[in-house]
Image (tube, rainbow, N blue to C red; front, top):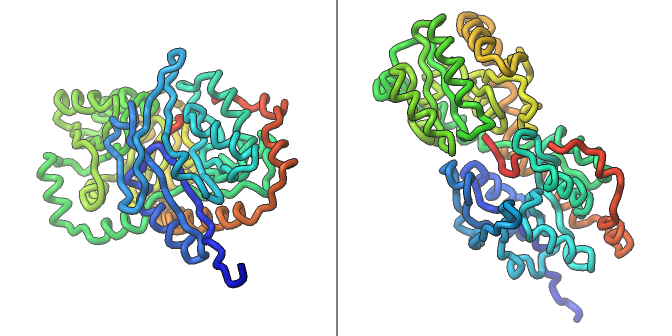
Length: 414
């Protein structure tokens, strides 16, 4: 009909739940897409299992809340997200790359028969070898070639996807980030009296305070950290460690705090309290898996010390060893970690140089940059030509997939 308005393109992101650090990203992405006449809808459920123990769930006032269901199949927990009615009429559906999400398979089949295209958003593979399940990784490698578009966390993830044989011109590198602007504002607004009040609250008296701030589960290696901390305390008498976070291994932090007066466990922290906590510290210690926590270090200008474990999340690429943080090569040695940390604590000039580098890199890895990149990828995906032949090719088996090493926690980790 002449004069009939064309409806605005609709994009739906389906995710298991919304971590607090993703809220601002979704708000920015919604604003940026709206400026291009594109409507964004985010459909999300509740954290289940280990995710629930992290105590990091956020909410979107404009989002669509569903109720996820856990399904046990042959000892494997799968998740059903009842979202099909929400994606009806969408021009693009974006889902998390995870083999245990049953709705992903349904959406890819719908794509193959001419329904809306489906895009993957993720790491590319499971970087945590210690918890990888061979069968699920085999499935993930195969289905990761099928989406109509790919939103890769960063260049490390994009490289993994390209190695699967996926076309480079359908990959958007988003440079995964957190709301560094708000964290920086909290940092700048915290006054000395607040920091001193927190030191008094925690009973901190030394000059060599370090923090751990993140999820608490096996890959984070809290046991390793506490062993290294005990050795560190012997060489640095005023060393104190504050542990912040939650998760299945939080009991280790609580037990250490009850046993050692120089170890403090304070649970999860956000906003000004988080900023005040980092203001008490010289270093951020995280000997296990490093993900988005590296950006906390950059923004707060508290260099991160980790080890060369093989299962870091893709964000480890942001850490430049010796420049804006430290990667101890002896990944299995608490003693080496303690020595490296003690040496750095005693080198004010090196610490100051690392802080300067952190400050510079905090300006690059921002959530505003991430939203801009993601928006550009959505617009490209919406305009990318599709054909039935191309869709059929997406679902064709390929030997190129089978060569990828099986090894990423199917959650976003800090």
